[in-house]
Amino acid sequence: MTEEPGPGPFPTMTAAVQETYGPADLGATPLFGGGFINFGHWEGIPLDPFPDAADRARSQQALYHRVLASLGPTRGLSAVEVGCGLGTGCALALEAYGVAQVTGVDIHPQQLDRARRAHAGLLAGGTERLRFVRGAAESMPFGDAAFDRLYSVEAAQHFRDLDAFAQEAARVLKPGGRAAVSSFFVPDADPARPAQLAGLLDTFATGLDVAHSVPELTGCLERAGLTDVRVTSIGAAVWPGWDRWLSATWEPGTWPRNFLRSYREGLLDYYTVTAARPAPVTTPGDRPPAPSA
Ligand SMILES: C[S@@+](CC[C@H](N)C(=O)[O-])C[C@H]1O[C@@H](n2cnc3c(N)ncnc32)[C@H](O)[C@@H]1O
Image (cartoon, helix red, strand yellow):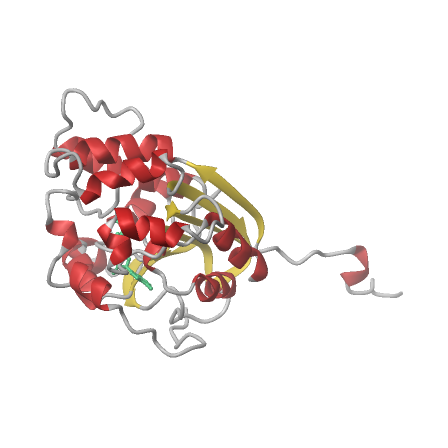
């Protein structure tokens, strides 16, 4: 597989992303853990009595299961995870979904160091089934048509340029390839939403998270040439559990508790969005002429 610069210059990390996934090491805080950094999919996980650290890890792994299962067949195929964080979702794709080769891409070099340490055993196997590569969603360091599957879990809220990400996703997927993107997005195209979210949630006010909307994402994917774009809201399984987990650390009325409020007020939801790169259509006229006698 070729590794080469993407079509544009390497995008610089924002100060907020640099700090959050560098010195602040968000994944090492008790809010996350288990090798993941996402809000979790809490279906089937009791919220009362209060969930423990194992339940929390299970919720985050369950979000990956949700996304990986939405990719269609994966056995024996190649996949790229965009915004792989600590790489645990890449290992899951190999171990539970029979993916033949997974590439984890992340913009933050410290996250990649952590991922390489956490999965040293798999990397040392010499099978080249797993690798971690520094790159940005908006400019991926791979050749065209490099992967059968592309997925991304709770990273797209950080991408500055969704159009560039969608163009790159379409470029690095093989014809017939499939993509799944899961994160929190604004449900509608109301231009008031970014200011409303910045007023409620510090991560939007600081610019760590960008108030991308679902119509914006689906438009970007379609403009990039991807088809069969399907949107599924999974917020009912994300926000109440995330808020319950937050309640151990954050009092009612503090800004992190506004995630659930934003969901209830229709400002934010959690989604899985899938799309496909069309396979070339072969018609009888495309066949080589039959040999003549
Ligand atoms: C919330 S963490 C999610 C990590 C992992 N997907 C998970 O669910 O455990 C977001 C990750 O996206 C990465 N990231 C942020 N902006 C990015 C970009 N433009 N391109 C690639 N990765 C990015 C961050 O460095 C971080 O590791």
